Image (spheres, each protein chain N blue to C red):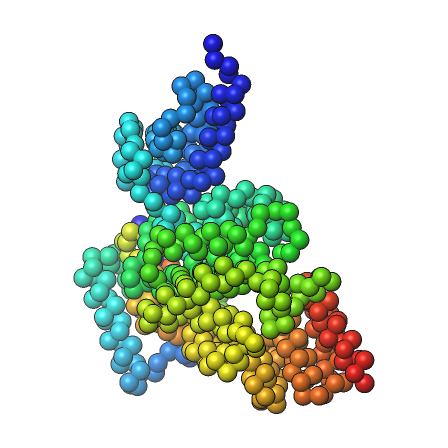
Length: 411
Length: 119
């Protein structure tokens, strides 16, 4: 007789593994066939439960993914049949072939995650919903893991995700890849969403929860595999890698943030930096500039040795301005100008942005920095105090406080 | 799915009659209309007369109250609508962007309720 305990453990492990690696792909396939997010998720959940029983009796199938896809699809069809008897509304599901699936060749399961990503990041959904839905469905994070990073209540995130799924259905957001004429703007929404996931993870420093930076890198890498040769995807990927490679160096031993130009280069992850450089070079060869490529190039110039290439950065901000004429871009550009010796011009520019950036902490820090360079110490001290007051991270507060102390001891 | 495209705009920001901007708005409306017909998505569409022609009605405690004027005084007025039959939101948004009023007003895109019985 076989011993059942090890068998049960093996089944649990196999199931965990396929769910961890292939959940996004399974869900994408199910949504595209069943036409409904919630139904697909419920069906996959049910199929996972049956897998534990079945695989325990008959052994782990050759392709666990194909098994789950087949069983989940049939469970989903069962539910549609049941609901069309009971509660009338099945019009969205009329396109589903209502035939049970006998067999699925794992080689023939198309990877439909690109469509899934475009649906989750549709501009008709709110920004935070896009983030939560993408992390939940494409990356497979639990609502608890998402809530931990957003410092939100579990149930709030759960509600947000379920509202987003309802909206996809009620607004009629399609499960498809955008047409060429919409490609650029829709891709920009996708990339901005992924980049927001990245930056959310980047400011979150000491956390035991899932690392959003890793999830964002996973997503952009996936996007690059599913849709190779797109310069903006490569640009966004490069930008995140340039930032990621400095992750350890960005904070010193006292926990204060360190500006890029003053970081210990030894601490940079040179493999990531090299990969970023390659991606950026490939993107630029395609001769179709876009905001993410420019931002990646800016990150690259900022890390130049022995000092940042401020001049090139100023040119790049000029190009970025054409794509994104926003006050934040203007502010960053002004800081670069001050590094080029145009402090007065920079300060004038910064002052004109006050109205638009009154709530934006970096505006106060930038102003303090430029005032310091101009030698207007008293005003700089007041500006640093204002920046510290608005700082939202401890590392940033520590850095600004050091600057303020240096100013005070200078006179 | 059927969608209604509700055209809202602020009359003071519309191109004035007789200007070249007005002419190009007219030809853009015409082109949008033609495109919708040609693609076989246009179900219905009308322009509305100004809000000064509106009458609003309510029944309060069994009594009909009529009021001269629109339901709500807003800066952007409902000026017309289209009803389209298209596969999904993206397709509806594509046609909404063709409506020239989108340049100076807002096009609200909303799916219609579907009352068809179960298959």
